[in-house]
Image 1 (spheres, chains in turn cyan, blue):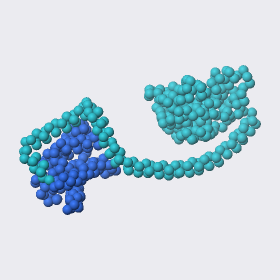
Image 2 (cartoon, rainbow over the protein chains, first blue to last red):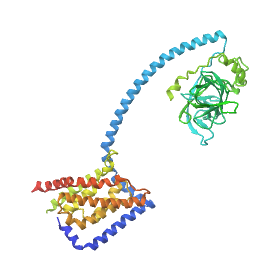
Image 3 (tube, each protein chain N blue to C red):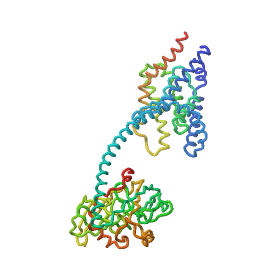
Image 4 (cartoon, chains in turn blue, green):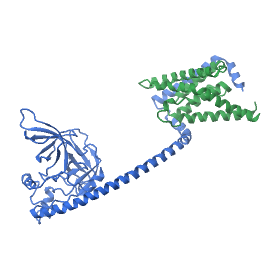
Length: 331
Length: 165
């Protein structure tokens, strides 16, 4: 077995060095070509195809083991999830039963005081298709439009709170202005004190501003901020955020507070558009000649927020406005 | 040294090289990944030292290219490393061959370390940063593995031979 080797050894060192040089040069050239110009991509493709069966063969047991493992963990997780969901559904059912009772009671009481019945809300789930890249314009575009009955001014919420409102409605998409847009102002009420004020967008996706609280305000950090229903665009009682910081700057007429929105402004993929919110003027104009629909508020809202506010006064703010059931499931 | 003997010997060589290639790309847990020795080099060193097979620079170059393609490394990197390794082995073969095992392991370790320097040269040219300390682990693992690999391959080879004798 020493035969071939012995012959080679006789050739001598210098030829070996030359061969080393040649092969090294070849290797370095290959590397340079591969690195710089990607000239050998074709070559590499062919070679990769040649060795691919080997790689696949080696990978096969590992792949299948991994898949089996995945399958089992998924199964276990799914069973867990089904159980927890069943428990949750049970709890929800109980709560819903209570709610139905309350709703009936509410209707009776409202009939007694002759107030307009609350409009049932219909929520339309809408998927996000785009966000505005301008950091100071907080807009999102959703995949629902006028063909789905989306109109300008409709409130947009997610499972946790108010997101914004529809600003522009095209055929199949709608642009939504977020609460946090600096151009947006939302009439809100701070619970439990019930103080009404306006929440302005701050331009930061995690902050709203309450700029005109009275100096002697009783709100404190941690308070829940909900929509007040004034202005007619938003139904009252939708959760908006939590009071985050309160300051009373010297020499200023108003106290200022910051609110952290509850809704996942920059984290949502699905939002809900509340459709039967007080209709925009155009729709109202169509319905006005006839007798107002049964569900419509007694006072023409939207146009006269002040009056609408009075209507709202005798209404206890409900912090946990029952969001449509689908809202929970989506998050 | 019959022709048949030669062919069967070749089979063992091919089998061990294939096994080395498989071990090179077999997926390992992330924690063990830096400890993966340079299997192909180890097997090549064995055959070169013990039987004079795989002694040419050409086969080393080709084998290196296969490793490059398999691991997706820069084409020619392992080829260069194996060619240089092979050349050095050729120079010192007669000395290393008759070392006692532990000394042989040291010599193999030194060869692998030098090989790592070659890799370092390539990596240093391409990347902006130097590799971490884990870069130097494979030669040490290879050195520790060498005696066992030596015994294993020796056993395979002699069984082939002994089975027929």
